[in-house]
Length: 276
Image 1: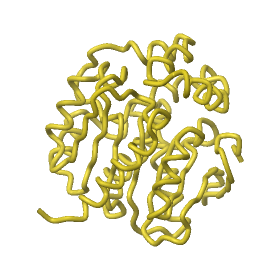
Image 2: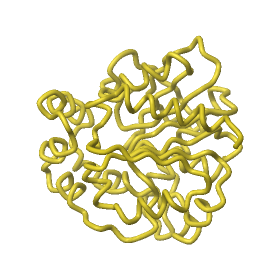
Image 3: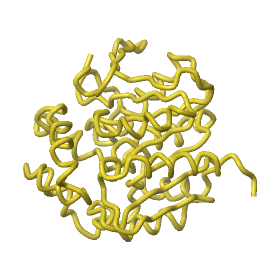
Image 4: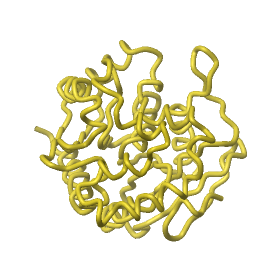
């Protein structure tokens, strides 16, 4: 069990295929379920705690090792599909028939997997700080910093208040271990499009999706700006999406203002229940 990746009580579940998933659980007294996936739950825990005041929340650690069954057409590991499959099988093992999904950055990928493969299970999908990529990138500056070993620099420019949040974020990154030990998974962490077979299928999903989708970005997020043209296209072409762009906010908004991230998720979910 990867208990160090959760700040607080960590639990473990063995899937039918023998894979062990680590997770946290909050708000057990509530009926409606929110599922969230991520590599770690340290700095995102305040967001989950706010959500758990109204929802039964599960935070599932997206693993980077163990058996992998999902492959690309070329035969390489397909981590976005694997993370999604793991999370979906977790919900089935736990007897969760329907749920809201709230993900941030790489944590959005399992939600998109479920949206594509098991849409009957999803009540809504909050895809915060990341969209599937259907166009070329404007730049690769932020991910380039991460992959070149400059994680601290990457995290510093992703914070509006680095003097308060940088130390906490670097402690969380340390819980992940050496990112270079699985560079394939790290690179694929921003590639939601790998869940589909091709870009045209991604576009058709976005244009025809019936699940409520919510997007959230900050104007000063370096990853948003690396993929700015793509993000705008996706927001403009996702059927009935609710899209929010907050001036001045950056990629690690859950550290700068966790209550604001949680509030956007709550407003989106409540809006998704209305018929206009």
